Amino acid sequence: MTLFRQSFSGSCSHPNWDDLDFRHLKFAVAVAEQQSFVKAADHLQIDQGFLSRQIRLLEKRLGFELFDRRRRSPLTLTEAGKDFIKEARFILAHTQHAIESAQQINRGKKGRLTIGINTSISNSRLPDILRVFHERYPDVTLMLEELASYDQIEKLRQQQLDVGFFHLHNLQMNNTHNDVALTSKTVIKESLILVLPEKHRFAKRSVNLPLAILSNEPFILPPANLLHGLREQIDQLCVAAGFKPKVRQEAAWISTVLSLVAGGMGISILPANVENLQRNGVVYRAIQGESPELEIGAVWHRNNQSMTLKNFLTVIDSFS
Image 1 (cartoon, rainbow, N blue to C red):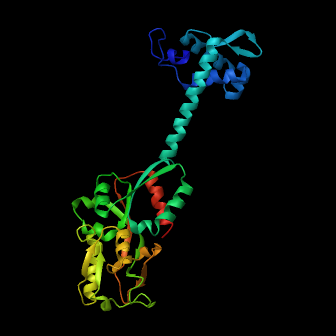
Image 2: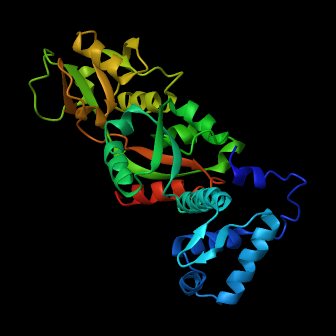
Image 3: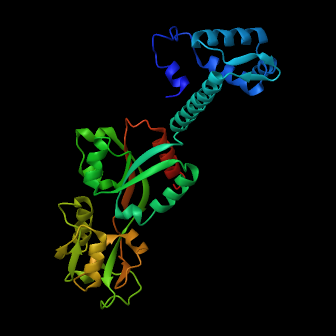
């Protein structure tokens, strides 16, 4: 253990540390670097006599001399003084780093942000949001968790996520007294589209397809028990077209739905962001007539006062 750390260990051989502060360290380091009390006092913009008294006071409390006063030009350190100044520089630098790091965190320029995501936001606006945020705040670590909307909602309630992205109708469907703690903003709006196997008889049609002509088709759809809000919107769209969809199979993940459609197992209706997925074996077609407009939103807890979160929400606003 070095001399400086021993000196500040609180042992009974070095009493009266209560009056010692960072000024003493700064004064001692300045004199050591300038190798002169006169130059150090000028550098610190303080009275030379005051500086000399403070150094003497420090030496008295340490129990040894820092400077060899037998030779005043240039002023040199004693052996004990060399070790002390080395440690003093470390303490001052470490303290400055701690202050700057805390200031960065306070301004939201450093830290960590935990983000819940789903396939829809990943396939649409999220990459641009993350790119801009990283450019502005490169020292913030982003932790992405791909979760279903109900899992995100629960984690947001427990403040285990800073922000989540999902279709806002899922928040409305899960509306309980706890949800008054959650607030949101719309990020994008999208419609529903048809997903057909590339060899489907209607796949070559480039025009919008009326949903009624697909009433007898087998459907691959999201499960109602997991994605209730989305499934309800799909079912309502089909009912408005005069039929109830004949569900051959359900799949929770978009990639699985697309695989089943590509394999000719049926057709599907999905949010329009899937068009950004270049998937072999499927084609995307717009639905003729009015389609529900799905809102993907950013959701966070009202009590989350993180400046990092506020900066992230500001970036989201820049895409509005």
